[in-house]
Image 1: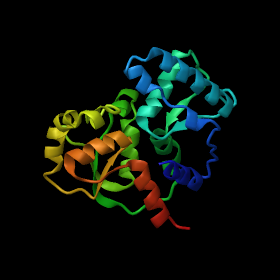
Image 2: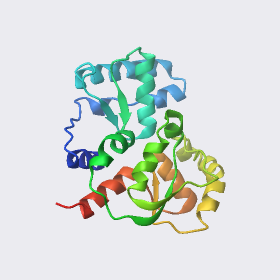
Image 3: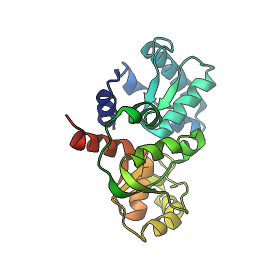
Length: 217
């Protein structure tokens, strides 16, 4: 995923740096969702410290490449009262800032799109659709779309949750063929793969691959 984002940013001439200490931080959602308040507080403090140094105290924008993590980072900063650091999901940034300057690519006929709970709450679904529309002539969101039920690690520990949550959406999507099956978060993609038996992929991974394959040198 990191390679896809860096490829797209580089193609558009956008400089990017991966901050030191990134392997020691996360969005904190695993602690928050399980009520582990001390762990969540510790991670928030660590995230703020790394982001302050990496962004030169807010001079640079923070890009995150998984929508649930992007939402988590936004909430961590809000919780700590940090207002001068901006976190943007990579899909939102690429849709708004890069797509207009990238060369048009050949499109496949159709793609199924599964928005995520985080992208819905944060208002990023239009951005995901814009990226998908750069790949396919038709972008289809199931009428029975809903939460995949994976919920972080819940889908790993209790697969019956995902099976139940995705049953109606999967049944609708199975009525026809799509060239791509797209989403914007790996756990959601795993949940939808289990439900449909199809290879679900992050929309930016596919966009980056097609850019490398088809964009003029």
